[in-house]
Amino acid sequence: MCGPHQSHNLGHNLGPNHHLVQPGQLLLPGFVDMHVHAPQYRFTGTATDTPLMQWLEDYTFPCEAAMQDPSTARDVYTKAVARLLKHGTTTAMYFGTIHSVANEMLVDVVRGLGQRALVGKVGGGLKNGHQKRCSAHTMSMMREGV
Ligand SMILES: [Zn+2]
Image (cartoon, rainbow, N blue to C red; front, side):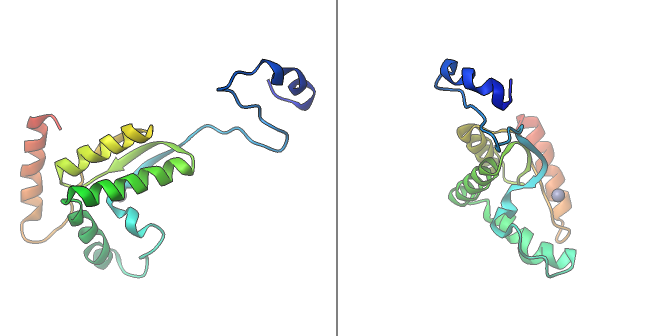
C-alpha cells in the first residue's frame, strides 16, 4: 500500500526490517545486468579510444591475464561486485577469465556480498594457438564440473 493518506497508519505497525517509502521516494526492483566482464572492471568507463582488436590487446587481455593472481582477482572482483550492488544491480551474468581459481573466487565474492549471479569462463585471444588451448581447457573444466 502506498499513498500519503494511507501512510499515517502504516508507520506504527512496521517492524525493524521494513522501510516506509516517503513522498518523493521511489521503490524499484533490483537491476539485472546480463553482460559484465568482471576482469574489465579496472577500466570501466575508459579506454574507448582504440579500435576493437587494439583495445583487446592493450586493455582487455592484460587485465584478464592478471586474474591468474588470486589476490588480484579477489581485489578486482570484490570492487566490481560491490560497485554493482551499490548501484542497484542485484543480479548479474559475469564473464570471468580462463582461470578456474579466479572464476571460483568471483562466485565466492558474489555469495559473500549477497548478489545473485551466473559466472562463466571467458577465454579470449587469437594468437599463438590460444583458441586450441582455450578449447582444451574448457573441456577440462567441463569434466571437472566447474
Ligand atoms: Zn562481452
